[in-house]
Amino acid sequence: MKKSFLTPGPSELYFTVPDHLKTALQDHVCEISHRSKAFQDIVQHTTEQLRKLLAIPTNFHLVFTSSATEIWERIVQNLSATSTYHLVNGSFSSKFYDFAVQLGRETTIYHVPENQGFEREILAKPSAAELICLTHNETSTGVMTPLTDIALVRATNPRSLVALDMVSSAPYPALDFSQIDTAFFSVQKCFGLPAGLGVWIFNDRCIEKAEQLQKNKQILGTYHTLPSLLQNSKKYETPETPNMLGIYLLGKVAEDMNQRGIQTIRQETDYKAALLYAQLEKSKVFSPAVTEKRFRSQTVVVAAGEAEKIKQFLALCQSHQIIVGAGYGKAKDTQMRIANFPTHSKEVMQKVADLLENF
Ligand SMILES: *Cc1c(COP(=O)(O)O)cnc(C)c1O
Image 1 (cartoon, rainbow, N blue to C red):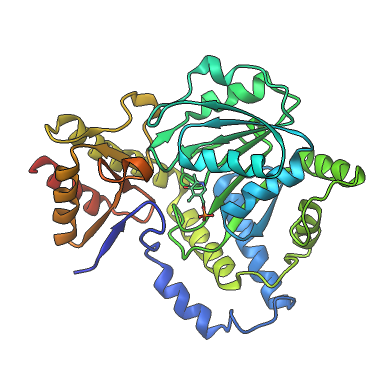
Image 2: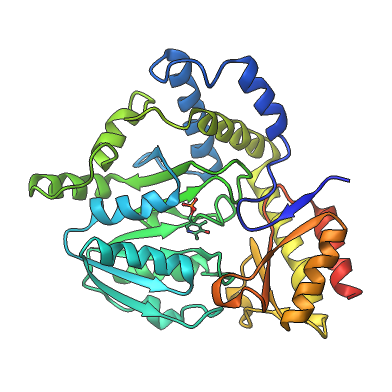
């Protein structure tokens, strides 16, 4: 039987990836020059399919980087001179904050305990920082911030730039890009691709900011500054020899997702998440780690329970060829994380729900 990886990244490959890999080899995607017309066409295709899938407006630009970890650093370097503000509710948002500290920014942090979300009053608080950093889906704790709440940050802070980490949710959220200035993701989560590629999306305000910082002699980085990435992207190129196979596969999977329809993907995601949460609420052994319903992630469902029970349940899933993720960090033994990405079928989710019901 096929093994199903319900892990929150790397995760199960999108089901069309094996076929696209074969075609990539036939078409010499890894052998052609990254400055050739053939490769520019691939970059253009991937860019266009992503723009369509995520409904990216024309005043936003899209570039390819190494994974999201790089983009944390690029955002701080290119979009702030002195001050950043971070809304932290788990390990990933905390790392984004750490990067700003390491880069010497005057940082402000608002921290909520694990598995909790931000109250609306907090998001609607004014900040004097140049850059405000948020994580849409905190992969470590299974907390998803509602998009309508994220809009409060923009409404209260029209002068700041707003950065949104969408690594473990894109393309699920129907994000209104006018509520943010920059967003980014890696491809090994919801896109079901091999790791090692990031997508950075930013608007004209970000370009102005980076250009102004450059004029003030701030160092924005070396080869991957926002202006150099942007300039290269206009020719559908990248400053370096990029992850050509990753960019190719991302375009193919984005095209497949467009054909399936983003609305269908969103509805299926909600349906599958509801199956799991319903069982977790009924369970006498486990419970949803996020108690407040409106903060529950639709793409990474986190369950809490006694360490011994979690261990037994992970082993049970494994005996059915289903690999479920362990908890993250401190919660490694007392939580489990079930990825609910577009590649994960209704059937496998139903199977996990049945195993939960009978456990
Ligand atoms: C996985 C993850 C990252 C880091 O992605 P890499 O591909 O490892 O760089 C950042 N933010 C969130 C929310 C993530 O889930």
